[in-house]
Length: 179
Image 1: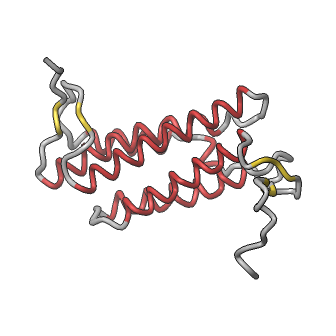
Image 2: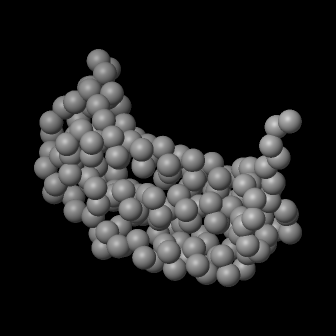
């Protein structure tokens, strides 16, 4: 199978099911943002990270691929798996990590260790993906099931960044108001 088809050279792309749309469509934007998030999570996983977090991130990457397939299919033939529909397991992961953290008393800046910085980057890409899915929903597409997953995932990536800093013995970067 060739990787290039030349069918997108005029700015269009094929969706699951065979229909074609502009690459600027809200649907393509939404699944493209989810794909970028998956890639950033992959970069995060290339860093030294505890096995417990790596296992969760592995599950997340697989889920994100299924979320992308769901978003790319306007006919709804790629249903979301149960783990994507009920993100309580992400809340449990957040609670586990927060149990190892000091209380958050200040706004923090993305930074600290390299791993934490990459978790913050993944968080911001996740928020952008969430906004793209909300835009697709606002345009009339039934994709609301994805929004809680992305919302919870961005929270988890924030806490993961703090957790990685703590485990590395690095202090979170406290925001200082401009003077």
